[in-house]
Length: 312
Image (tube, rainbow, N blue to C red; front, side):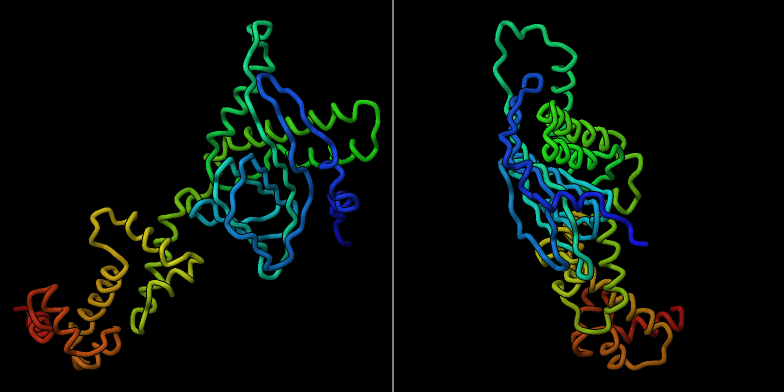
């Protein structure tokens, strides 16, 4: 029996919450809700790099996809969310075989100038300051919706649709709960993230080098390696630069190291000719291999073979 998607009711009146003029005060802040809805991305649908002047909360209740936050790519799955603050460049894309639903909340947050009557701040003011302060510094990667902030979207929609006494206050409270629960989810996120996610740059670099080690025998370009990681050539260049601070281990140098290591292994076995080794290790000609090898090791491939085999 198929599982009922609890948020499907929000598709009946997708702009219901956005028709409301949702403006309210929370502690020292003026909160203005700009967008508040459920949307759907068909499989393969992409939203090009863009940014907003406000805060945008993205929750994934169903489906799969990916997001690029500035220049880091992350996979998305049900139960995750991420936040993009003002000016943060991001790219969204649904999965190739599966669409993706997204619950979106766009809010503008402005701090009010305190008056004399507001000099004595209460608990609500303190909590609001703490929450908004954390929103401004949340890390740019998805987290699990540990405290079920998604449910607040449905609660707000039901309050809007049923329009009972206290509906507006209920909607306001659910918006605040989305903020509070999102911040709370990130409070312990570093304790629950997996190692590959904790250092995505090192993980992608490792995968790139492993791909190069498996394919060094043929023509191999930076663009091809970048494509396998779903990165641009520019992003891949930056990755090699950041992972090798000495400035020497560029993509070309790392690939050359891999090929020369393979050449040395073949020379040590003493079976194949220099021409055969050059061809099978990705060097265009034996003359080119000779020049690169001599520059790196101070001897010719033939001399290396003799020295290795004889031990002299």
